[in-house]
Image (cartoon, rainbow, N blue to C red; front, side, top):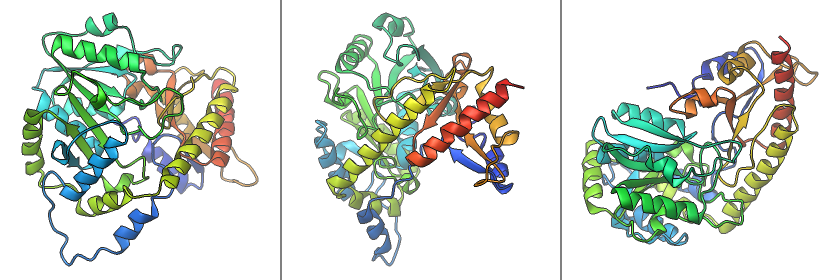
Length: 393
């Protein structure tokens, strides 16, 4: 397993902060937006006298609430087809353990969420990347490019939509092409749809579970972490209509006993957050996106396409090695000012870790626009000064 590109440089950031340096965290998708008040209130008013195990598949009331929530997006599933998990991460791991044997192959678009690669390594799964291009906005490759990577050991295609780390939103035509490939080759389609609430284009979001003809082939991965700013409660879901897959996943769920009790209580109440909450969160991220992308592309030599969803973007930097540069920003660089006499710097996630073959990501970083616009403006300014200093060495 590789170290996470999102967290591997944390010790250097911590050391910089101990030395009084202000660090702008663009590396991790940790929202700064408050959790819904209904969720916080539920945590404050727990009346239980015993904090007990929950059912392995999660509380029935939470699963019923999730079923109603999915219905708003054209996803028709019953509570019995929903498995509550310890975050979306466990849903990914459970799907890998249920669908693959060691030595089997998983096809992903690259760049991809780095933990897919790590979880696959932990399960003995070989990741086969299908390259997408920053020049083309990371759109889905051709059917031929995908099919030429399918072998007798291929078991599934994994798609993140809207995409982490690129922010790309897959179109209806692209999803239909994937559906046809899945049917033709008898594969599963694992669809990570954690960011469905954050779609900024006129192209409507389409869930893989709303595609006709692949009802038994789709496994959906979900999480409340991002849409409700509840990363720490560790509540996600695995959703599928395939009964055999659910039976296999249940064995894994029983072995780990149950998902977090307190997290389920908060998540269930958060489903009742007023629509104004999600609308406000959406508008805030859209405004941050518009600002950050414009500001980055005004830095000489920097390029990033306009993301259509989520709150990430992959950025090409004019450096020899992005990981080396990211570490240097934390260990050797600080921009001193009157407000910050001990300096400011930025933390980013090196792009190589989002590829199975790291070479295409050598000059790329992933940025998350989870800071307020004022901090984003300052972070971009600091980055521009860091690039000038680094390339002047």
